[in-house]
Image (cartoon, rainbow, N blue to C red; front, side, top):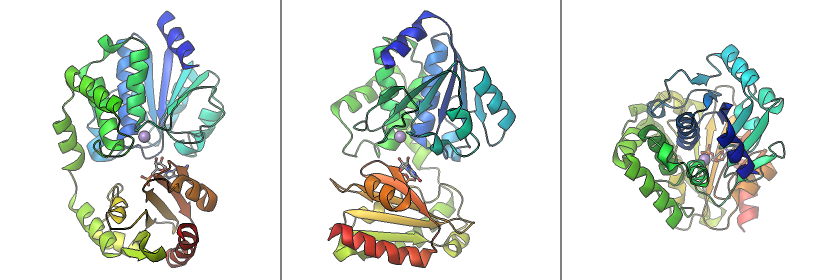
Length: 333
Ligand code: 5GP
Ligand code: MN
């Protein structure tokens, strides 16, 4: 159990490896760097291995550019070496090794040391015997703060740690507006602010630093919105020609899918985005008890959370839209 892990950490210095998922978002980076800063302040040797680089705004998170962070896509040999040396691995903000991408997945699966999962996604993989998994939590970053509390370690939380954890909480709670936001979430955020994290600065860094291509991407996506299933679902799509004319760069469509839910009566919103290889990446969002995790798992070998999930399909955009119209209509009837 996680308490045994914390106790073991208190007894001696460990060589610790922290990983997070492919295309790391604010919570992935926030939890990974926040935990890294904390463990370093507690005397451990810590390395963070990221499958690939996050978006530009997240790259200015405190510690991102330091020597203890390796982006595996850029430095694969170094990443492999870190895996070989580590004795304890924290897997943060993902539930299964397939989420770290094809280069890192075998390294996670074959890791010889102790594997510890800290995550809020559903269906945690059995590979992780030591797990702090709680799907009711709004962010992995909040869970890291819980571990710090359990470790009686707030004295080791510096501004860099606090900034990262608060960034993760802000990202995954939709700036404290999703249903997963609790009194405990707010109390944790308050504690991080007391340490020196600045919510306004984080917000500006994350949300007011968009390239113009993001606005144009949103323009195409919003214009494409259609209602289906009697107005209970919205579907937005970005074809490769839309992306090209918007000058799309990775991350530009993040958050777009949420706009589908802003339409009166819509319970499920889907965004389809064509990638260069013709594969369509799907993002699902829902309200209340509508379980898009289940829908994405069943039909599109995807997953995520009850109200936010993803998947992919190799059907063409038009055909996929047709298929979805049918499946969503059946589901929501
Ligand atoms: P997004 O729509 O923002 O890409 O992802 C929403 C949620 O679904 C995230 O929590 C993410 O971890 C999860 N997710 C996205 N794509 C996939 C996927 O292909 N497989 C699984 N298992 N989860 C996904
Ligand atoms: Mn998360």
